[in-house]
Amino acid sequence: MELLHVGLAALGAGLAVVGAAIGVGKIGAAAMDAIARQPEASGKIQTAMIIAAALVEGVALFGVVAALLGVLTT
Amino acid sequence: MQPNLEPIILSRPGTMIAHKSLKIIVTFTLALALLPFNAFAKADPQAEESKEFNPTDMIMHHIGDSHGWHFFGEGDSSFTLPLPVILFTDNGMVTFMSSEFHHDTEGQYVVEKDGMRFVNYHEDIYKLDAGAESVEFDEEHNVLNASKPWDFSITKNVAAMLLTVVLMLIFFFGLAGHHKKNKKAPAGFNNILETLVLFVRDEIARPQIGEKKYMKFMPFLLTVFFFIWITNLLGLLPGAANVTGNIAVTVSLGLFTLALILINGNRDFWQHTLWMPGIPTFVKPILAVVEVLGLIIKPVALMIRLFANITAGHIIILSLIGLIFILESAGVAGISVPFALFITILELLVAFLQAFIFTMLSALFIGMAVAEHEHH
Image 1 (spheres, chains in turn green, blue):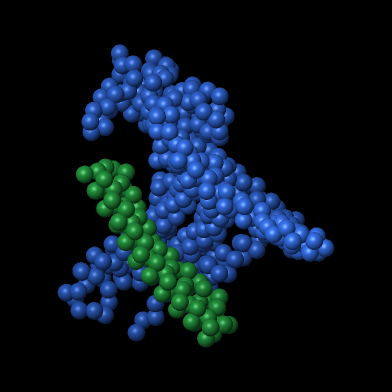
Image 2 (cartoon, one colour):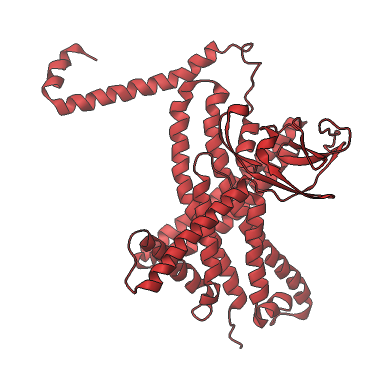
């Protein structure tokens, strides 16, 4: 039973990471496109990209922390 | 190697070195790849039951807080910096050094002070009831024969934080003193600091908060930026504390941002939060709930992000090192140590990035709270 809990928590953490990976990947790709079109605006684009990536990453870390709590409290 | 190639190789020293180093690399990699399996084959399950390695305990010990600053070694031969334990009990304040526990964290070694007896159980300090010899728990992990006093100890994390504070005071009083004395650009280390201060001002505060009001928030943003960055970097040193990977520390940092938003939020901000103009009346209460939730989630996200990033980095490094002991083969070190080094270098970037993102998002949230809206 405990193994099931840990397994589910690990699966949850993995799913959160997959979501974040897709999100950060799309942000990175869009930023690359934008920089390629307008290299002179790269500074502004990078700042916006980091903020957006941080927000996506924050959601993923919520998932990971929830999973960690699930493992540690069983 | 084919023997007939040797004269050609010898005649060209450059080729020979390249050839030799290639040979060494190949041999080394093969040896490393084979060693762990060799160890598996030889592993004797009966020989290791006396001393079992528990990776979870090792990692939790390293990322957790403790009452002494442990550097290396085990038991009484270990090298540990004793730190003061400060407890508030029903009978007043009690202080003693953490070395009086003699490195015991299992609640066995009893320290007597002012007629009260204390034990350290997994870095929680319990005051034993009369007649109790060691701390006991029931199945729900409720303590049976002891009580928990208020613990205001200078723990490892507090000590590391104080170290950061001292470093920051030295750095920035030095920089300020330089500017008081002369008008020239600073040299050396002060120059680096000034570049970073200008980075926070020009890349973070100015664009996010706005030209008119950014100066008011510069002290907070600079303090938070340098505090997080320096503690992150100090946390990467071997034997150092995991300060920004402690949820209590990041909660406090998040609360500072929340307090600044609440105090400095102007009329427009509160109107847009509680009674959004320009939408049908029946939607306004629903939106108010969402906006107030958003107000709380912002600092919570800041706090979780910093905590999880730094803790995850530490866990990855410790897990890679722990692999050597889990697989019980020195050969694994050849793979896991370079990996750990790679992650450590990545963590240098993360240390800066997290300080930057925390400051940037704080500035963004504060900027949203103080922004002047144009009325239509």
